[in-house]
Length: 99
Image (cartoon, rainbow, N blue to C red):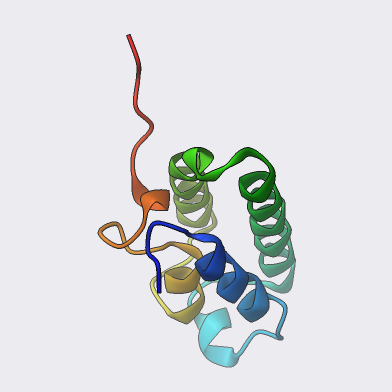
């Protein structure tokens, strides 16, 4: 898999979020409403990446991570799909400032 292109990872996350929650997911803090909201957000982000390019990817992950933290979602299957490992894709980079 090309880790410089997060689109296949986002596709996989959206596909997983479209399926009903398992008991394990609920125990980690997921609700049906949160699952739908996150799936919609990722779908919109995926569209933006396709339209505006991969340079916008570095801004996506921090927002999703903060959102999941606020909702009390613990580690698990869905969270790992939604949040790409920080060493594996550009989505995890912090925004950079240009002077």
